Length: 91
Image 1 (cartoon, rainbow, N blue to C red):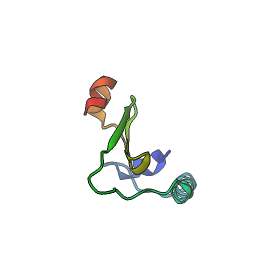
Image 2: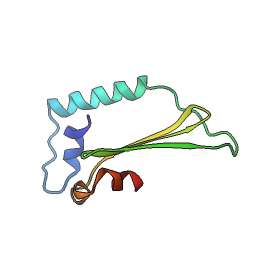
Image 3: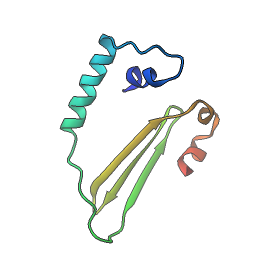
Image 4: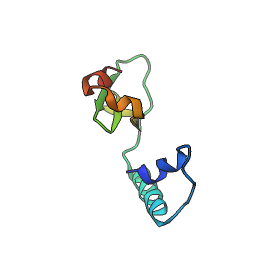
């Protein structure tokens, strides 16, 4: 979803903010503002981490007592695209 913006952070890519980047930014901003509210961790209870990987990126969710504490995701780096999905999920 954020690819038009993340491409601007690469070396050898000229930073040009156009209509596509602006539309992506506005969509991300709207999604983040309307996303479920994150919970704060409670004491020393148990945490659960859900991980997923594909040939494009990695994602994870940290939960405690069925409440979402945090989300994380990123695109794969060029060399990571050679890894098997199983290896990516093991981290």
